[in-house]
Length: 414
Image 1 (cartoon, rainbow, N blue to C red):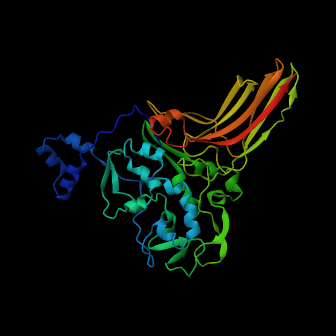
Image 2: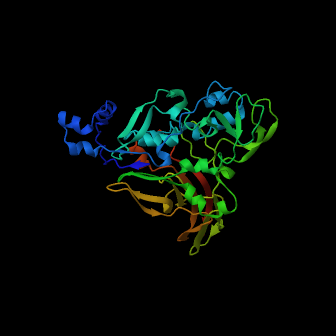
Image 3: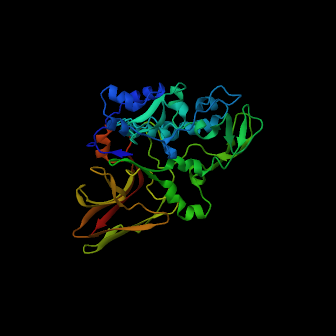
């Protein structure tokens, strides 16, 4: 989600007065006349209901019988290996993510919390609707059952596994200390895309655009039976709970881009690109041409790469340097979307690699003199630009990229 730094904050509407008047049974029109408001102004304050699924938090979940808490820490007492996998995931810090915090705090858009802390238990306010349809002025009330500790667990175990006083799983064991319901359909990719496929224009300069679900829907991955779970929750053999025998279940680290959320952590990376390169000779004669070809193919991902946040991009860099370290030629290529955020947010271009799409990049240089050369090929994956990180106040505090591929060749020319 992005917002221009030139965008102005929305004017706060006086919806408290409206709520009080409605509660005591008088008409809004009567009271607005008596306190000096214009009837036309009062009529503008219309409550827009929440109709999109991402506008609503998962309703409050009670603790299933047999448990004392629905926190991930509590679950980890028995599901120890799964808990450790989850703790190292980006899901576990979706709320603390500095990029999210910087974007969210610009206007405190409560809707954003529904993907980063999805349970109503985790949210300080209950949102009933939007005043005049504006996300900046929600009709909200304090949540008396707000759990601050649970909020800090971000996308926690209960996000997916607790509903209606039951713990939902795919195995359906009868030996658990809590009531367990087997429902693999509920825990299917439909649950994943509820957050990973959100496209909404909150206002002209504020958009949320995550299209991973749509990308997966229309390509070979779905047709061949692959889902989000196939790659991002691969099967693993280990005890599901303490005291149980090893069995096949799903890895709960949710590997993805590989870019960690914090400098002191690691993030598991899924390979998406198939990389093929031409050969480079160790010696070239003056007059010959270095003709290097790099082929990239999105062979493994069931969606475009990069995907998700429109700020993500790849940079392919070719560098040729002389024996003294002086740059002779440098060429860069970028894979990703380009957006305009002001005065109206709109996508300007998109050259993301579609599933199974192949792209070829060339580097040519005519050898002009004898000596030693160094040729370097690098592919880096970026979360956002330094410019946007600086604007958000997180430059130097937040990992922005990782190296995907690097090769270096020493060349002698005669």
